[in-house]
Amino acid sequence: MEIQLLCIGKPDRSFWTEALEQYEKRLQHYVKFSLIYLADVKSSKKTNPLKIKTEEAKQLLQKIKPGDTVILLDEKGKAFNSVSFSKEIENHMISGKKRVLFIIGGAYGFSEELYQKFPQRMALSQMTFSHQMVRLFFCEQLYRAFTILNNHPYHNA
Image (tube, rainbow, N blue to C red):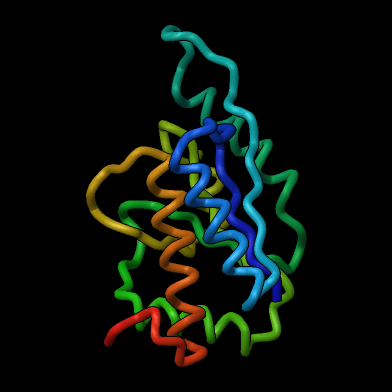
């Protein structure tokens, strides 16, 4: 199985990026994992957010293949604790799916088209975080899920 995290917006070179690279490297011990960054849609303060979401959706749809499991990271999605998230990951692995894509949308969220096409949603929190933080939090939780599944002492239950 392969897991990808698709993100709108290029990363900046910061301590967030260094931490992300560490988790990306750690995850390779458990699963084929990659972070995919898509360019922000060029806009101005006058650009309609609906137009931005539509353009972002076009970029995202180009990356999604038939048969992919797609999960939108959304504050209104299903919340998991670390153990239940690890079980969710295990279920995806058992299902025989080749790719599971988790997607972090842009500043305005997802287009209605993406919500309609991909009803699976997951919340990391009801709080709002910067995209840099969300990327890191997701990767840390994914790593934690694999350590739980492999009885690694990283997670103290």
